[in-house]
Image (cartoon, rainbow, N blue to C red; front, top):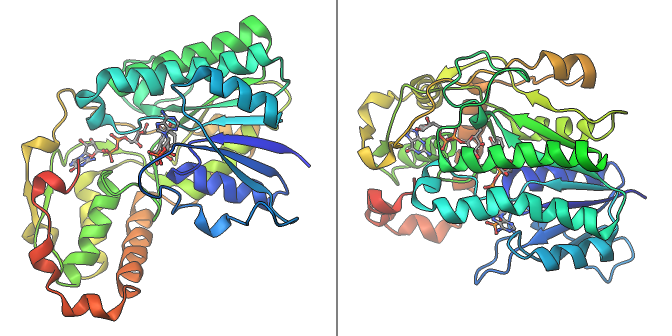
Amino acid sequence: MKRALITGITGQDGSYLAELLLGKGYEVHGLIRRASTFNTHRIDHLYVDPHEPSARLFLHYGDLSDGAGLVSLLVKIHPDEVYNLAAQSHVRVSFDEPVHTADTTGIGTVRLLEAVRSSGIDTKFYQASTSELYGATPPPQNEFSPFCPRSPYAAAKLYSFWITKNYREAYDMFAVNGILFNHESPRRGETFVTRKISRAVARIQAGDQKELYLGNLDSIRDWGYAAEYVEGMWRMLQIDEPEDFVLATGQGYTIRDFLEASFGHVGLDWHEFVKFDERYLRPTEVDALIGDPARAAEKLGWNATLDGKDLARLMVDADIEALDKRPEWIDSVNLASWTPEPSLVGR
Ligand code: NDP
Ligand code: GDR
């Protein structure tokens, strides 16, 4: 049985990847952070009591800031594959917490690589790199496009990209970068723009929310489906020679297009609900990201089947279903009066 270690298993991608690997017969180990509230809701459906003989998912407390802990964990688990998905992953937040972002999203990667190297374990290593590396480089972007990061997050990920490549070359490690363009799902964090919109559509339709505050509506993103992208991550570790790949749909849409598709899906006109709030602007913006996934199609046989507009419909339907499942007593409460102030709605 193959054994994998996933950092960031409680996040969107980690949960889909855990599902995929368990389905392929792997024993899956996940790094989780101790929190004062439960942070495992995305993987609760996969959990089997470790005392059961059928259990193949095991969770371990740890943190990318704790290098010694990572060494101990690797020695204990002895994984065949390591997927480094953990990061402070919010671009806007990285301007508020640049040093923390550098420490987890950047230095965290070398802590994990160094833990692999120093523990002498023979394992393949996947690094969650990002289209944000291209920043100001105009689309279409592929594996040969120059990097031009535009945020503390992207600068930290740039370090992680190069240190992963360096460990591959210096120590002959099977270490790869997946340069993934935006990918979304019903499990997307609520403060990323797609989920913020799909949740708002569901809540506005149910009468629980009146307005939606957003920032820049002109940026273009290449949105794919997270459940498909984790398959691409896995395929990158199954080829003979390690190399870096772009995963994308090749189709770009503006935030306006996403609004049109989401609100339009339930027969609403977004112009009536969306308001501008400058707090959601970034000091430096990434205007347009549209990936060229040709290399992944050719060498990995990987293709995205859903694009941004499909995602808008899928996510709105999922958020409406989630609201429908809430207990009946909640309907007797005036939720509209509970709508948080814009400052609390997220970034
Ligand atoms: P999420 O923000 O949903 O998940 C991030 C994960 O990292 C969570 O499990 C979080 O734990 C964990 N984490 C954060 N800080 C630490 C730390 N110091 N030590 C250990 N774990 C930590 O991200 P996604 O699932 O969307 O993305 C996965 C990875 O892929 C990230 O690295 C992201 O930057 C990158 N990426 C994402 C893209 C996307 O469109 N989704 C595109 C390209 C790259 P907790 O739950 O406790 O907060
Ligand atoms: P991004 O995703 O920055 O591309 O990073 P996000 O959804 O946060 O922003 C996309 C675009 O929408 C604009 N925008 C808003 N964004 C947010 N979050 N909230 C708003 O209210 C809002 N209004 C407009 C943004 O300005 C931006 O142009 C994501 C993350 O998952 C990264 O970890 C990953 O590396 C990249 O995708 C690829």
